[in-house]
Image (cartoon, rainbow, N blue to C red):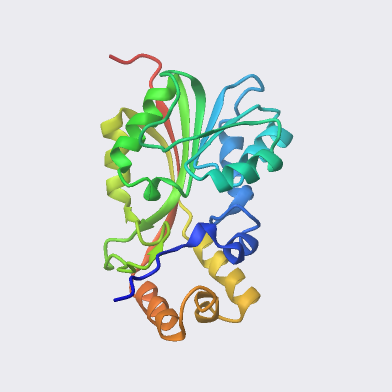
Length: 243
């Protein structure tokens, strides 16, 4: 029997092209918008969790004058990140076990990566641990709306298939010790990304056919259509004093 091949969406060149390399809804525009609300000082230490090919790190260098640290488990993506943002520092590792000292950063960014970490509660605890007291977490990701089923796509690895309810994210933040200061529903960015895909490839089904057979692509479209998903943006804080 031939085993199924799991498609890792964020490693696909076609998906990178349609998102401008950022591999997420909203791209760098959403990153800039959130950072403008709590702009880090130029000497801030900042960690980009799940930095991918380094597009956010490059933005942090050029537009905000920062020298970020990027963390990602993929050696392939980290090699791209070094070329994308040579002024940044990059390390290999996972969000659930960040290889950095406690209280190392004033700011942590995690964009469309929390749902991929496997254990979101542990990952949020780690982000809390490496933040200094008074530090800020910028978080964005796909979430699953309560009205719909979880999308069951065992041959696809992406934020879509691992999306959690928004209440789960809020509980995880609270349990880790964070105080929520901003929660935005940015589901319109998912619609924009779908529109970009349709414009680039003719239809969503044709996009999925780039990675799988015709029938599998059709089933993927049907499954996703039946699973209402949203996109959120969050700013949370680590208290200046904690026990």
